[in-house]
Image (cartoon, rainbow, N blue to C red; front, top):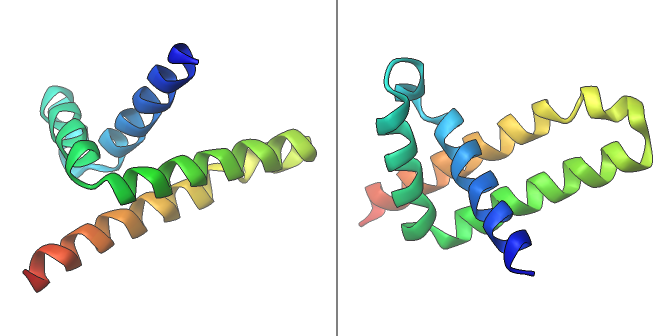
Length: 91
């Protein structure tokens, strides 16, 4: 159970780091920012986990859908980032 929780946290931080613009030039800054965002925005982290679970389930049910899984994951990560930036603007 603990290994699953650690893997889920690593997946969320890794995916959020990939979605950050600074991941192109400075991976360490991207991972630090993603870890901070994962802790601050727990709802967004839950949405990312749901997107990963949905992609994995679709790929498991029908193997050719595995090639389409990165698209919805990218959409979910973009939506979480827009959701977070809109919340910051409203405050």
